[in-house]
Length: 231
Length: 200
Ligand SMILES: Nc1ncnc2c1ncn2[C@@H]1O[C@H](COP(=O)(O)OP(=O)(O)OP(=O)(O)O)[C@@H](O)[C@H]1O
Ligand SMILES: [Mg+2]
Image (tube, each protein chain N blue to C red):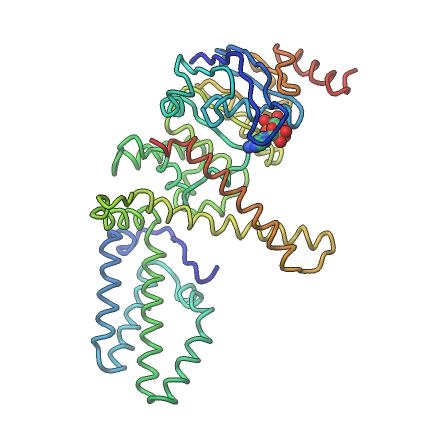
């Protein structure tokens, strides 16, 4: 597992007065890390720190010793990122082309490329849709494709920002099962609290700070108390 | 979306032909159709192109559906040619347009975007020393094609949302949210491209 080191990070978006992250320090090397918290508490910003999509105003973020500020490219080879809206991250018109797009930097050609793509599609049950236009897939299939395109490059860490928010119960279950079976380290943000059952560690964000850092059950309890829904 | 032919998967000879060859063929066909003098020869050529559809596993109905938006234009051209020229000229012109549109449609339907943009990338190769980045142009083409169904989907959502709220169709109330959402989509796609290693 790569070590994620977030050290004294504060961040304020341009043209905003309130900081979104305040002095966040945390080290993560568990296989499954969940991140929960209210809307606007800073979860997505935290996630974007991990692949250098957001560079912090203050503090440092290191993945496996690589500083996201100086080694952005290498960090992004290590860290796969899965967004909430698959439509935004599927960039090619057809299913197989989108997976192949991820492998461009690998210098794979012809047969070797086709084999890798086919293998990734099989893993996600999309092999029958290889040549279909991406826009004809269902929401769940689109998210599967997005995940396939991220995982085909074999990242060491996968960050997922609410991967099931747009999905129905069945497809959310499908993604949850898939995530459970991944060998890669996973940092998963969600409002679906059952998704983080069985995770090794869960962070609770509130107003730009980590206010709880625990096993799932205790973290969820802390979160409930925080929003006043605790018993 | 009738005019925007998209790739139809298949395994015909035409599907397997390199994209460059198909584009060259298209060019040759355009030249040939201009060289042919008689209208009957052009009609023959049209039949050949039409015949290529079923051979590639695409139904003739689908082929003709591509022309839906074009019938009126063709009719207008035809009538104008009859008036200012003659019958044979009118037939020649209309048949030539039909022929080229159908042939171009056939190439699009049997060629993946990747293959097509690879050709563009290769053609633009010599311009590299003038600061043109062919890969970027190729990617731009793919992204544009991909954006069409996404933006159409956004438009549907906005129209439905307005209907649900009982709002009548006002162009501005439609255009503004569409623009906002399209921009947000563009921004997210940009993030996704970076996350997927485009900056390598
Ligand atoms: N690109 C941006 N520019 C300016 N402000 C932003 C930007 N992205 C997020 N914010 C603001 O930062 C705050 C935290 O946002 P963030 O997306 O990190 O929260 P979140 O915990 O992921 O919320 P949600 O559960 O709704 O996804 C919000 O107030 C948001 O409006
Ligand atoms: Mg968020």
